[in-house]
Amino acid sequence: MTDSNGVLPLIGVIMGSSSDLKYLQPALDLLASLGVPHEARVVSAHRTPDWMFEYATQAESRGLEVIIAAAGGAAHLPGMVAAKTVLPVLGVPIPATLLNGLDSLLSIVQMPKGVPVGTLAIGEPGAINAALLATSIVSASRPELRERLRAWRKARTDDVMANTEISRLTTDRS
Image (cartoon, rainbow, N blue to C red; front, side, top):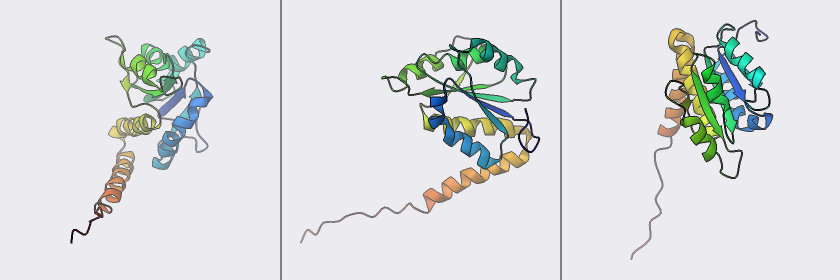
């Protein structure tokens, strides 16, 4: 499916539940601001397994180059999708249970040998980094994307460099 400009998405962003969107929205916003064609879908490993397999097996033929898969709890989505495609899959653990995403992190990072999932941090920081990593992957053959990514990173550096001076409180010892 193309976007409103007729462009095929390069990155698929999938999540196990619509409640995960609050963690992924900043990543979707970042992809949009970088001008990276992407799509976002709810694809549940447990509630819609047939749809998950269809999504994963058709991703490459639809033009996707990277899949960001976010899931909480048992977090099977990234691994099951990785088992059905040779595309890079980046897993984002979602803090959906009382364990605050640690269960999801361990589930995603402990993939068996032969079924890799690049695992990022829990929650929004992981989602943002997944968007940046996915952009880096798809920009390897797209200089215009690489330059937008380079500019985004330079802006972060410039922000820090503009604020390197820390005021110190001193006490009068006289």
